[in-house]
Length: 257
Image (cartoon, rainbow, N blue to C red):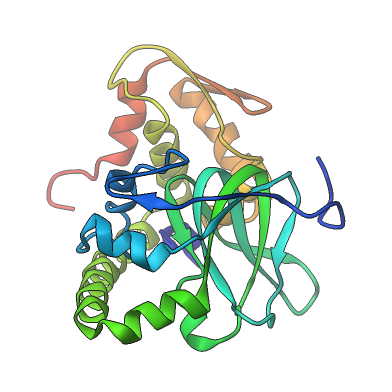
């Protein structure tokens, strides 16, 4: 069973073109309100100064996409990568039997498809799950900026390697967890409480959650049913937890494990 969670957020894709808003950077804050202190926390930009980020972003437009908008398909030329400012995007591939396998769900503020611009094609597809504002960063200008400043390219590469090692550790940890532990960890992550009763709303459809957690939808349903004995009651996307501390206990390995 794959551990796709580690790859770490009503119009159809045939509708009108997404609305666009040009964003030009000036110092720490873009004219259209893009806070560069937030952008600098992204793995791709964390080692860079605001002025350098502004140069690399150039006049990248902000695009506003409705639900179910297809951004690109596997095999399309990779002419841009994206920064999710709001909403949610899923990255997915189609299996041999035509089923959709979700590789990752991307939420604010995160980047996706940045590696694809170096390869030249998108290896998987991307679709908007919840209406989204995306910053579309053109590959040509971004790569030209890196070629013109090799020192910046090296610093960016160092940041990406650091995050890749961190991600690899997360992959090993998550893939060692049972389905019950994965679901418990997801629910715990949705509330700041450490004890007591609470109600949480699942941030996406159960089908998406199952794929993101690396399990079949039927397995997720069985896990949610089993969690009733731990005081977890699910109705649609609403989950009532009688005692968050019991969920924390499910996520904590026993001493010596």
